[in-house]
Length: 594
Image (cartoon, rainbow, N blue to C red; front, side, top):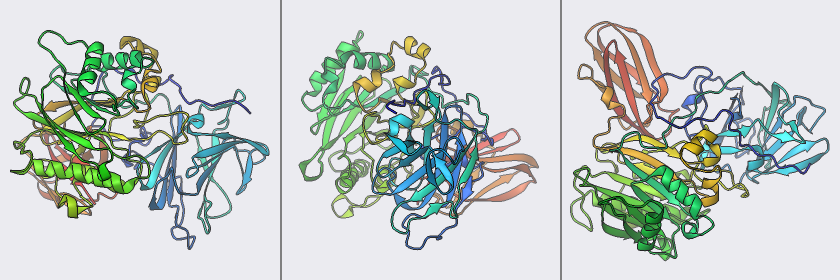
């Protein structure tokens, strides 16, 4: 077999024209999204539960395993016991009998595996009898989440793969075997057998909604963009970059990997793509070897943040938003070390967060007015230990000797919020894509922000191969603009400056919610008082307004009520506890932190 197998399929992709927050609980057949959270799986029973500690000496201890499908993807979730990097330094392989026929494919545990994929080696095989063809992530449409280390992962594989013109997934029933091929490695299922999954009939489920244009002209649009070794000036890529910028229409751009050009030259290049109107100008600044900010608002100061051993280097930029808001904006633009440089990447993130901590305190290089919006963006290269992501969001500094104490980075003494935009046209979030790499798509680029003083109104990662033809045409884009321009995708977030209102707008003064303790790291209590009997719905929603946990939905008597809140299925971050009692509504911000 010499064919290459591509996974792009736009039959069921979202037409991007509006963003609405959904406040409905997930049903049994709810949409699964690859987004580093697992709440969307909570109504699905595990497809198989493997006994724990069943293989003495095994580093990997398979636990629960889930499978689900939509019309284009097979979704898998697997618990591994220990914190690992799924794309490196492990011996985990999944074998799938895609035709439920033991006489075809590779014989293992009583099945005939037609597809096997080794995650640590980042390669797989499509078996045809005794022979096989090597495949990579792009051939089978493989995406995994998270990109950082974790004790469990969720995956998506395309179900539209063709082999010699025939569907690889040719049966309604498929079978799985998971194996850790290391010495004393665990196997799922534990006995000599396999796990059966039956495809369910799912149509074109709604994908995450977004708007390529701003929903409101007053929103502040911020773009983070790694343009790959000065590619922004490459004549062969300029037309793609031009179409992208004209479609996105950013107010502020944080560029990474512009090494050979000044900020003035970069602003001039942006001007050639997005000409200024009357009274407009592109302001600019550069810090370190490659991070540049180009902005419609004045860049009043630039503060370099040194990298480790004089490598890389990041920057803080103070922007004057007074023409539209009575405030400045502190924008940190970062390009931390790549790949297996966990120690140096951690130090650079420690240094950036220390800058934020010091800027919020009187004295020092910069003193911010209380309530100044803060955004940290860039190519963070978070492909290693999860701790680096934790530091970025929570201010948990690892190297305290040079960089000082931990702190809560937001003004209300909570964690930063993660925009975590979804990738256009796909049920997943990734910001880096290179088809010919042995690494599968990952979330390397971030926009995190002080959610107490700014509200996320819209966000997306622009992946033009995932956009339907009508949306491409409407916005003047070509299907492969994003992947031609760079291996990093444009990351876009729209903000309303001021007190965050995405959920709190729903509150009334008639109800109050008390959460103790908060931040929450283990079982906590939620207290509220009803002045009369009411039907009560108590939910946990994420920053996009999506219900991630239904705590109660029942009729309660008047008086005080105490509800247990167990955060073990929620990843660290900011959520809202939302209480509806009759016509009364209230919400309370809650921070989940280990």
